[in-house]
Amino acid sequence: MCGIVGYIGSRQAYPIILNGLKRLEYRGYDSAGIAIYDGAGIQLSKTKGKVSDLEKRVKKEIKTTGTLGIGHTRWATHGVPNDVNSHPHYSNSGELVIIHNGIIENYSAIKKALIKRGYSFYSETDTEVLVNLIEDIKKKENVKLGKAVQIALNQVVGAYAIAVFDKMKPDEIVVAKLGSPLAIGIGEDEFFVASDATPFIEFTNNAIYLEDEEMAIIRLGREVRVRKIKNDSLVVPYVQELQLNLEQIEKGGYDHFMLKEIYEQPSVIKDTYRGRLLASEGIIKLGGLEDHIQKFINANRVIIVACGTSWHAGLVAEYIFEDWARIPVEVEYASEFRYRNPIITEKDVVIAISQSGETADTLAAIKLAKQRGAFVYGVCNVVGSSISRETHSGTYTHAGPEIGVASTKAFTTQITVLTMIALKLAKIKGTISQSNYMKHLRELEMIPHHVEEALKSDTKIRAIAEVFQDAANFLYLGRGYNFPVALEGALKLKEISYIHAEGYPAAEMKHGPIALIDEQMPVVVIAVNSNHYEKVVSNIEEIKARNGKIIAVVTEGDSTVKELADYIMEVPKTPETLSPLVTTIPLQLLSYHIAVMLGRNVDQPRNLAKSVTVE
Ligand code: F6R
Image 1 (cartoon, protein in one colour):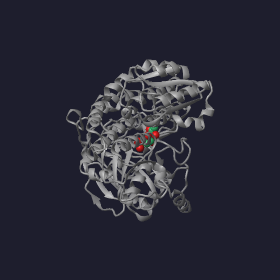
Image 2 (cartoon, rainbow, N blue to C red):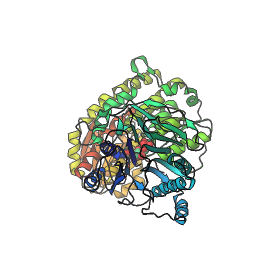
Image 3 (cartoon, rainbow, N blue to C red):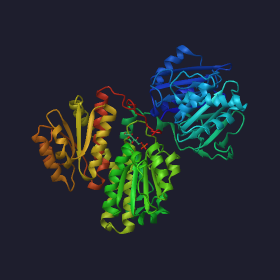
């Protein structure tokens, strides 16, 4: 969380940094700041609030001319969001200025030692401690900035992506990474630094992604020098050619990124299976899987680790893996798994699912599983992300950049990948009949079309949102494959509308939540064609008997539920196994419209950040 951006070259740094911060705002948006070297000193402005607030403040407060600068958009960890705690932070002498994404865990001990040495602190942040530690080492040891950063980082415990410069030596930026992402864009006699490549995509396609425990000295007129933080040894950096384009990171006429991303699902699901699913030939080809297929076939069990929406995709995978491939699956919250001494053996395969590929808990769960000998497979969206590099192998979802904080297209593309893996394993193991296998390949190929159809109910769903926008609570119910969809629907609603919502397996309702039902309670029930259809109908009757208001997701042409429900949202017919890919669409739209009607910041809901790089 937090976005960092920096520039050194011959262009004006301010517009590049400001625009970069706007693109990185998905990573955190409770405060923002900027520092520019103006040829004589540092111009620094920072504020609680969003990048747009910073922009206004900068206009009143500082001169923005200068070709070296750094900027930060914050998701608070240490210290409340206020002006003082915002980044950048000066060192006591005012010579160094730093931005930081991450947490320095031992900052308190370092702070005490620095106070004894005469340092003062103005903010509550761990970052201000780090910049003063660097300054102290630089002065005490009489070393250059790069060396001081290296020594300091060997003393800190935690996670970081930092960028720091020295006004006495304004031809370089020093950056370092452990646990939080950091990309360096390489232009012609100019360099960019950012948490991801979006701030510099219109300037260069060449980037170095620092590995953990690496730092780089970025000096004008010289190649980027990358070093290991531990022993200062030089590393030959790999300059990657980026596949990103500007269009992918713009709203493209939609009011919000979330809506754009909901509507992108037909095309990105296609991108996910393009070249991998050859339905007419009965082939599924997944590059990352081919060489490791025996690991899956011989696995005692598959353990899926993930957080949030990705965890919900993992739950769907549990159903399909067990159903088709007959491999036992456990789905774990990465944050619990990593701390509970789980039993993991070399015969286990761990699948880590993550949109961002940077989620700290998932990353830690992967490291733990690797230490205990498991084979770890990643399902990630962001190419080159930490999780994609930390796993033994994996499959990218190819959903394109997901910028709305609420995950939408990441979920459906993750399920698409997991479905292909399950089908492939089932085919090899012989646990699925040839006809069922072929049927599902063809049906999977049809999903983009079905999603497109489901999206046509948008206006109708907006009308339903209008009716229920003032509800204080929602209940979401589903069974079987659609139980995870109920959880996901509830999560979408609460995170962007701030309405309390709970997802439940429909049959569990009578073991507790039924007590909540009265005429004030909207209950969203996923009641599409399935093996449990009649059971779900009975659950709906139970809700009706208690005056609950029913909003049902039904298969086109349904008549039974239509009569019982107060409102219906229709989706095309699919096999039950693939239904989460379409039943989730109306739930995304419902939460989107309610949030818009309530005037919420849909793309940047309060307290959240897109990429959770702290535990
Ligand atoms: C919900 C949401 C979060 C993420 C979770 C994991 O809409 O976006 O729950 O799904 O933080 O993030 P990734 O998938 O990046 O590991």
